[in-house]
Structures are given as structure tokens and as C-alpha cells.
Image 1 (cartoon, rainbow, N blue to C red):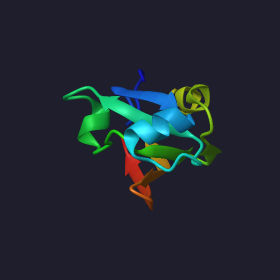
Image 2: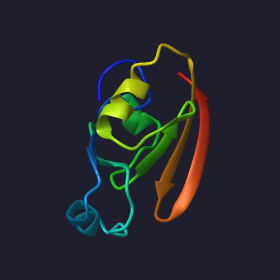
Image 3: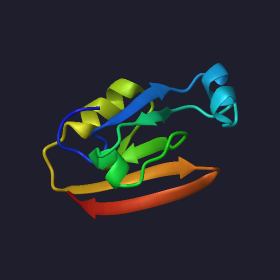
Length: 96
């Protein structure tokens, strides 16, 4: 993803059962997952990891890669997001 957001530098994809299996994620999970992070990028600095499933950004439910891209283009300094990692829900609020 590009732009000025905590997600810049993350490569994401919509989850399919096949991708979920490859990443070791439950195959019934839907959403958008991080599949790679550019070293030194904002996404790396904020601790995103391959396999993270982005659930929500600033109140917007993330169900497609296009929705995440739209959310990442918001012009805001405050970011609220929910990520699922290893079956646990992580909620973050940060200023960027």
C-alpha cells in the first residue's frame, strides 16, 4: 500500500481458503491479510507482520483490498485499527 498511513509498505491480499492455508490461518476466515512488509517502511515500523488480518480502520470494516486501500488514503493524523494476529484481536490507536 502507498500513501501516508501506517499501512504504507505492506503488501496485502484478500483471503481465500488456499491463501489462508498457506499462511497457517483458519480457512473459514474472510478479510484482508498482510502477506509481505517492505523493510524500513511505516508498516514495518508499526509492527505489522505477514499473516495479520486487518479487520477495521477508523471505523471502516475491511473486507476487500480495495476497502483497505481506500481507508489508507484517508487524510488523518489519528489511526484506529483492529488486526487479528494468531487468533487474537489487537486494537491500536496511534498518531502518524
